[in-house]
Length: 326
Ligand code: HSE
Image 1 (cartoon, rainbow, N blue to C red):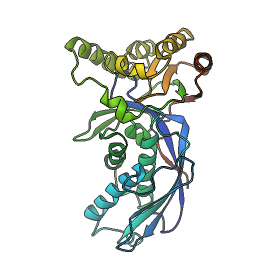
Image 2 (image 1 turned 30 degrees about the horizontal axis):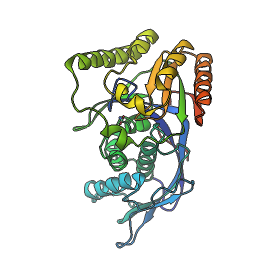
Image 3 (image 1 turned 180 degrees about the vertical axis):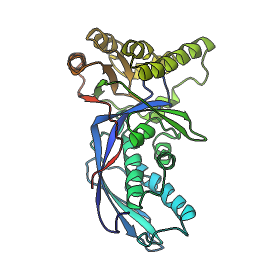
């Protein structure tokens, strides 16, 4: 437990959800970009809001805790803390516990690399640390999903789980929650963020609600192949399995140059890749940094050619998840 009114620092990584074929179930955390946060535990008066959000970036996100993803996640945590730990609360935790949260978003909101998940996950991991870790990682994922519901209208954990656990995760089930941490071979990740806006809620609303059995069979094969490839460290199998016949054909029309980019990146040596989360970012996995840099060069060439502002990252899989720094 950390004494009241003592600030801690938190680093919350960006995440790539879906991993192409695993819509809403697969995801991984990356080392760059990440959000920075600071938190302290405080005592609130009964008429005060339990969570205070202080934005120290320029995105102007809501500071009303009920409208802020970190706030929504923390409110769920505080409510459950009051229910479960009323009689076992340590002396240093006030009866009317609250949190002050400073958020410096280095992950641009709406970029498709888990910006909202980083805020929600960072906040609940920070609160758990301040409280002396009464909650499990699965509990924290449940709380943080309230932030995702606020951001996209639906509870999903494919960004939250890798953000909290680190590495690659499989969300086998949400209700009841079952998260499986998967091993990953050394992979380099190249991400391009074309500067257009794709809202997750819009990118979800255009999806078809029914799939053909033949497409479902292909998708199951790819998901199983990807998981097997990760476990066996079989890079070729990973590459072949990065195929999505259900979501990508619908969503890719929202991203200029998507098909050409994929072809160019694979020609440069990428194992494969696709839309990161709901887009507009696109990610590619490569074996080796040199290839990842060659892939980045292709991304820059394509979007420069299209006259579309963009930002790239060459990074690796983050195995730690959210970190409390002091
Ligand atoms: N699985 C989600 C989606 C991730 O693709 O809509 C975005 O938050």
